[in-house]
Image 1 (cartoon, rainbow, N blue to C red):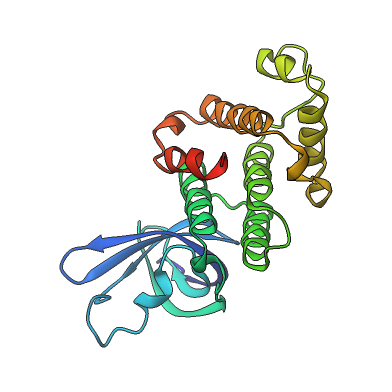
Image 2 (tube, rainbow, N blue to C red):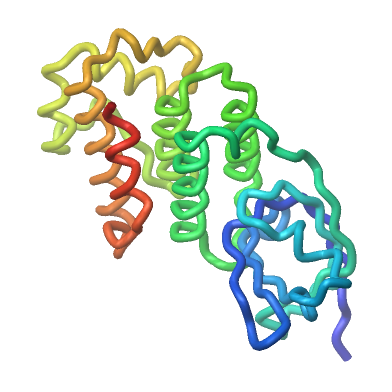
Length: 231
């Protein structure tokens, strides 16, 4: 006898793709259960009202019966928690948001909850939406948080990290990194950071992600980001 638990959790849709003739599979980062895949049967029929909720980046609440024997869970009920109206209007915000989804999808393990990282992701998207902090800073912040939440904390005082040692010669970069580590991102003024320094911070974080997550360099979105980030 197998007991099915009813799960009610907020989620961000990471990726959705076709399955068979009529169905969709949607991978979501849920607050309470981590990365979970759902099957939406009959999603492509005109009568289906669930599929619009499963566009990548959607911030939704999902109710489902958890069956641990199934690879794909079945959605009972879904609703929007918040609808992004400003992010889709900006190519820059959309590109960085899609990259954040791709990073999350790649680094998260299935059924492994990271509720605090989920909250950081929501906060990041909410500030993308409101425009209160520059997107570059938010993106760096999310990269930092992915590393620290998964146990790869960057320590400014590490004297064995050759990449970090070369950055230490630059006070502006180190100050920015310290603000990112401490979470004081609203204090960072991007206008005072030169293009060369932006590139160095971006490269450092990218190299760290590649070092800790095997195959990270295959992610497509970073090729696009370089053009957006450094203009």
